[in-house]
Image (cartoon, rainbow, N blue to C red; front, side, top):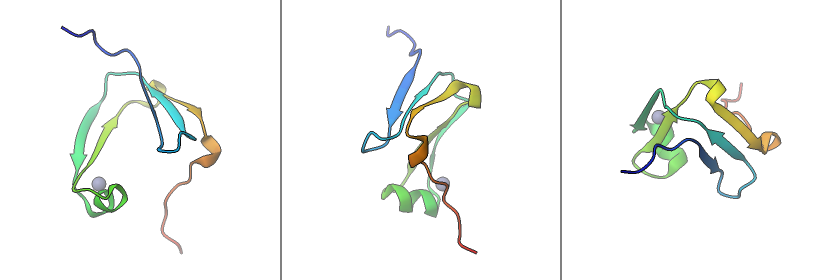
Length: 71
Ligand SMILES: [Zn+2]
């Protein structure tokens, strides 16, 4: 049987933004809403939620922008 994962690392496609997550997840799901379908280009978007203290942004904070509707 495999050992439980202690740390999960990830990044954006270009590698500019890198992060680290420590399980356990609060929840994980596949979202089918229209926004998730549009930004992923697929039928679903897989998401996982952890408390803030279990998430560490390793690099690329300056590259992250918040999506919002224009006024
Ligand atoms: Zn969604």
